[in-house]
Image (cartoon, rainbow, N blue to C red; front, top):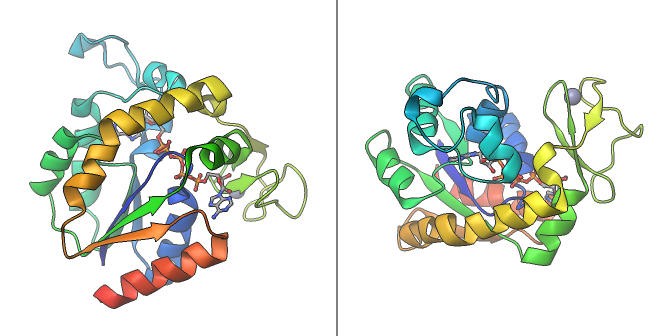
Length: 212
Ligand code: AP5
Ligand code: ZN
């Protein structure tokens, strides 16, 4: 299936994408991870505010559309089924996506602002494989060590309280309209992301199975 996962920073998109990959065998197409692997890429020829993706990311700003659209286009042409996570983040990107692929399921994970701040400031990620954990809500078996691969767990540079607040503002201004844009489609499903990890997954799995 072709799944689009929408939601604010910290809604659980990355966490639930892992479940979708495992259960439905889809590819995880995530602009966030792709950009994190290319933080130092030289984009100075675009003549924009900053010269690398990392300078936008660490401030919680959106990386320019030209850069992100190209990443998604390339990833989607090689994917059969996918879960798209982190894109589109503004209406221009949503229009671009229309020209790249159709979608079977469009899921919006909704979570309130204070919960998002708690989740993001407490998040830890594996430096090796990228798996997500949380210091309270989703602890690894051994503190600081990834259950999946034994890698070291670290805090993302944009998970400081200041960057998190900025990311939430950018979301409200740019990405909330994208959710509204999709909300009248037949394939659109809203899921309460403020439930337990397992309860969110149960709703999500059912929503995808409904469309198969
Ligand atoms: P990106 O990596 O996409 O970050 P994001 O959208 O801000 O999303 P997050 O990864 O922070 O959150 P998530 O929803 O995946 O939550 P998670 O599962 O980790 O983007 C980073 C940056 O890249 C952007 O700021 C921008 O600069 C740039 N960028 C990316 N895409 C772009 C685009 N299209 N255009 C322009 N720029 C772009 O969960 C969070 C925490 O909560 C975890 O610790 C988890 O364990 C915990 N948790 C999850 N679910 C639950 C639950 N149900 N109960 C309790 N805890 C939970
Ligand atoms: Zn790992």
